[in-house]
Image 1 (cartoon, rainbow, N blue to C red):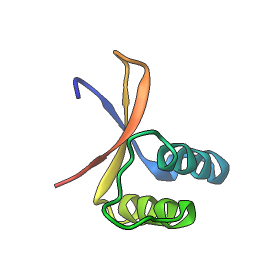
Image 2: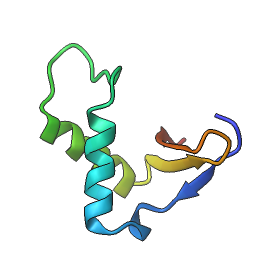
Image 3: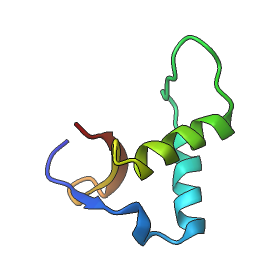
Length: 72
């Protein structure tokens, strides 16, 4: 990813945060391994990763898109 701006999830309203998690969990190509994972479980995993700082929400001004990336 090129230059991006990290967006703290705490700055989002609860509704915006939930909507973002739902949109990300339903994106095409999202792979959670060999077993099927429910939408609720995907959302829960994403929320936990963000809350524990294992992932971050980033926005790319170049592409005007956002994503969640893993953090080291």
